[in-house]
Structure formats: C-alpha cells, structure tokens
Amino acid sequence: MLKGYTLPRTPRGTSSLAPTPPWHYVGNALAVEFEASPVEAAAFMPEGLELSSGRSAAYFIEWQYTSENGEEYLDPVRSQYRETIILLSAEYKGLPVAYCPFIWVDQDISLMRGLVQGWPKQIGSTWITRSYDLPSKAAPILGPGGKFGATLSVKERRLIDAQVTLSELAASLPSPSFASAVNVRYFPELATEKHDLPAVHELVQLKSRDVKISPVWKGEATMSIFDHPYLELPDLRPVSVTAGYRFSFALTVDDLVHLCDLRTGM
Image 1 (cartoon, helix red, strand yellow):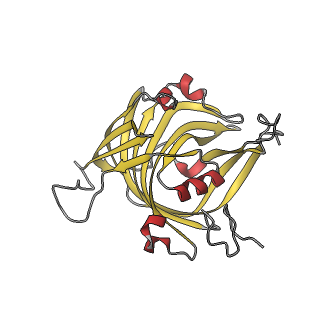
Image 2: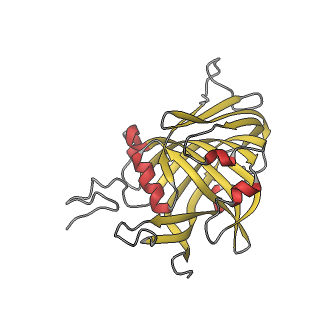
Image 3: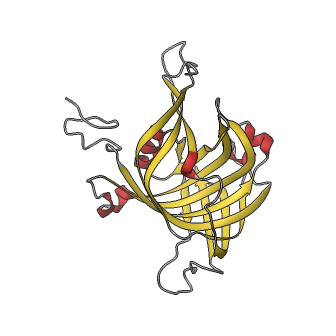
C-alpha cells in the first residue's frame, strides 16, 4: 500500500512533498499596510466574499518550519523559506475576514502546503533585511530608527520594493491580518468538456493554534508595485501607504474550516 499525505505517495511515505500535519511555523515579518483602489480590489473578490474597504497589507516573511516529529530545522534547506503575501479586507456573511489574491514562496514544500490550505501560491524570490542581537553598521536596530527593506521578484522581474522605518511599539497587528483569512481551494478538471467544472472549488477559513506574537514595532513605510507583462498585482498598487510593521510570530496548523462548496452553493 502506498503511503504519504501528498504526492508522490510511495511504499514508505517519506517522499511526499508535504508531510502529514501538524505543521509548526515561526517567522520574522515585515509588513506594509496600504490602501488599494476599492474598484480594483473588488474585482479580485471570489464568489461568496465582498470587499469591505480598500485597506490592504503586504507581508514579507522569513519562515522556519518543522513537522511534528521531523525536526526539519536541523536540515535548514527543508525548513526555511521566504514568502510575500498580499491580503485584502473582505466580508463573509457580514463578518470581517481577509482574502489573499496573491502569494509567492521560494520552496516547493511550502507551495504544496499552501495549496492544501487554499493559498494561491506561486514561486517568487523574496528578500528581507535582517536584524541581529549585536550592534553593527551592517544591521538595523529593532527599535526606533531601525530601517528595513523587502523586495519581491517573479520570473526574474522586480515586482515590489518596500521600506519601513520603525518609530514606536504598536498596540495591534497590521490590518488585515491572518487571523480571519478566507481562502479558495480550487483544483480543475482536465477531462474534455469539464474544463469549467472544477473537481474542487470551495471557500475555507484558516484555523491556527498555539499562536504567539512578539512585540510589534510600527513606523513609516513606502512601497512600490511595478508593472508586469502578465501578473495582475499592479492593479492593486497602493493609492496611499498607511504604516509599516516589524514583528515575529509562531503558530501551528493542522485544521481547516469548510465554509461553502462553490460548485453547489452549500
């Protein structure tokens, strides 16, 4: 009998791209809160969600991950990856949620775990300024005056530049946040005459546990989204930039809330 949580399934099951949950994460995040055009942002809303405002956020995260028993962080290439996430403010049945139209990662393992959760992951290259415990001209301080940058490139084209200058501790996380994110799980059919009839098409809500958040630093920010020959992210470029943030957080994922099967409306 073949074993494994994801493909490829094999006799021992150790070759699966993503192992069986739970999945444990810890990361350093640089985030930029911005306003997108409500007209443009509304066009990205899937069936079942409505745009609540133009408030949006871009998250640039350097992650480290492990499975329940794998200790993947001892083999860092299996554990570490960088990610850029775009979140829009939305509503589901009148309740505030977040929706992700775009997300880029630099590891296939992360991409597979994301597709299982409904994150629309693609491969991209994210780079983020690091801070260290030692004072140095080569690193910003994690405090007032600390300057951080982040970039995203996709298919060798620069797509986002962001910079944040910290000034004070914040009382809350950027908005929208991951806490109430709703994703679309979608898997198409290849059979003739079924190309418009997906095998899976459903709204799901993320469900994390054991969430821990460091002190959140806040400050001024700038962010530019550049034109791209086919990616539509420039439609969401900032009308204005509200603030920037730097924080660390940890969480565990092993569950999902099914909200609606979009094929049946149930």
